[in-house]
Image 1 (cartoon, rainbow, N blue to C red):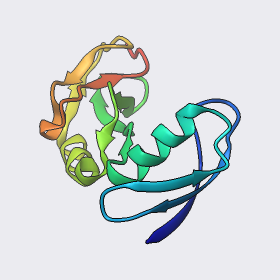
Image 2 (cartoon, rainbow, N blue to C red):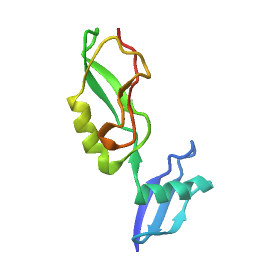
Image 3 (cartoon, helix red, strand yellow):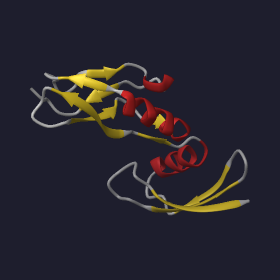
Length: 119
């Protein structure tokens, strides 16, 4: 049996979770203030995901980099591949916030979108 402590980010409470688990199952979650805590613990232990935020080179704008993020969370296993693809990208102004910069980046099923408009 393994143990791990996490802070739940499913709601504003930010409960401290103490998790006991084995190779494939959550055995016990202590500290969850709501049912979302148990669900968060299982996902974070067995299939962790993150929204990737970064910048992309942009030409013709007042600044040299465009802030971007993935449209949905990406498996932590793919984060380095996503970042490698982001590093290769270069866009040309104008760009509007919400524009898709790259569809299905690194086969992650997430699109890379602009988080700022630049003329």
